Structures are given as structure tokens and as C-alpha cells.
Length: 363
Image (cartoon, rainbow, N blue to C red; front, side, top):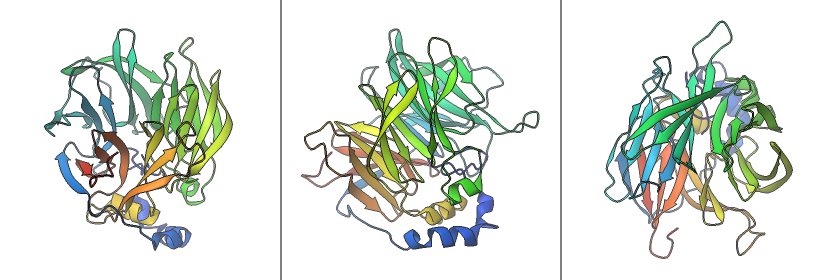
């Protein structure tokens, strides 16, 4: 998700609510051109809202416990409420939602979750969650961790936690089949306004070796690395400020041989849909900053399908399949295609949006 770092990341790290004051003019000048154009599509699509916790930034589909369900990562980023976030479970058939129980967490753990990933291990599924603690600690700023949960039918059970100085501004996490982890750091310096404003390439992807537990930089030189996923030895990264989706080859913890798959304005989290990737995009940065400051201000959303080169037409460009002016959902951060519908979560508002395309346009 684009991390506004309102005590806890959500959208672009350059955001902060204070950007609305001292840097408002600068933002307007830098983004004024794109801020004037808002596309709209999908007017014939039906939609419904499912109430969940505030700030449902990320979402995964859990098919490991009988009937499929969505697990949603929630935290109220506007309020900056420390330690009141959590996880929700959504039934896609009944569209009922409830907070998911958690057990075994250490008392010191501040629950402010962000990006998540779900993977099946040999002894059952695990949920990996980025959790932020932005309180000052010994003058060094916040601490950011990866928390590991065992996923049971009725609850999440705390299992482990990872931390490292290289997790300086983590945004999205990708769990690999061998137990390794890849994590995007959206900024070189957490909360840096100028990095985002100037599109500085200070962002990284870091890797955790499952054999040694050591972290290393897998690739650097990115501008707001955001969503990340993998398949068949390839790793895919969305860069919100470069407006590009890249493919890499993973080799011994390094991301090599970068290939640009196409342009997606403000691309956020990545989810698979067949051979393609679904990517929500934020085409108007100024509107998003305004939305971060107030729910009364909407922020337009685009939903893109990105060809990864493994489908019927490996040369196809990304296609925008749906857009909205922000009236139905603002700041959408993750999209999942499931049984003819698209399920979208978002950075701030407390609901998941279900989209049903007209006949013939189903995902």
C-alpha cells in the first residue's frame, strides 16, 4: 500500500498529514498535471460494501481450511491509534465479516499490521504480517517486524517474529516456497517527504535467508517499491513512484535481469489472476494525500491487469479494466479476483468493496 506514515504506513512515505501544510504547494506543482485527469469506467458494474476494521490495507485468499475465506489486515492509520489493529476474516459466500481471534502474542507486541502473505508449509499454512511500531526507541525511531502466525480454522496463533535494521520501511512481504522472505522497503528513510516528491530511487527489496536467518539487500535503486509476489523463480515488483511493474530472476537472494512489464500509475499490491497480475493504481497523488487527511475527500482508483509474459500473448501491455472517481472506493490497495467478482480493500476506510462486472466481463 502507499504508505502515508500517519504514525503507521499506509500509502506513500512522503505523505504525513503535515504535508498538507508546509508542502501543499510543492505537491501541487509536482503533481498538478496528472491531478487534473481522472478516468472513469465500469459504470455498469454492481458493487457492495462489507464492513471490516478501519484501514483494511491488504488481503489474501485462504483456501486451506474448507470453505474459502479472505484474511484482511486492518489498522486505523488516520487516528494513529497504537496497537489497536488486527485481522478480519470475510466469508465470500455470505459476505459476513468478523475480527479474527489471535492467541500467543507477546505482551510487548504493538499490533499495527500492514502487508501480509499466506503460504502453505509442510505442517500447515502460515500468515506473514508486517507490523509497525513507530514509537521512538532509544532515539533510533520505530521498529518494524515480520510476525509469523500459524493459521487455524478459528484463530491465528503467534509463532515467531523477525526484525532487522534492513527492515527500515517495510511495505509488502512475499513468502517463498523454501521459507525465504522478500520484503519491499518503500523508502530509504521512513517518512521522507522529499524522496516521494522527487521520486528518488532510495527504495529496496530485502531478502531473508531461511537457512541462516540473515537479511540482505536483494535489489536497490527503486522509487517506492510496493507490491511484491513470485511464481516459478520469477519475482514481480510494483513501484508506485516509478509507475512501473518489473519482473526479476531470483538467484541466491539477489533480484537480477530486470524486465519492465509495463506502466501502472501508482501501482500498489500485486495478486495473481491466472497468468496475469491484478494491480490497483492511484492515478492522482494529490487526491490521495487529501484523502489521507480526510474521509470526506475522495481519491480516484484504477484497476489494472498486467501480462507477465506467460499467457497467450506474452507481448500484451497492461490493461486498465476498471476505474472510479473515488466515490465507490478511495485508495484501493489490493484486488483479488474470485468467482466472477473483484474484491478490493483500501488504505483507510472500513470496508471491502465487492465488484461484479456485467455479463461477459467477469474475471
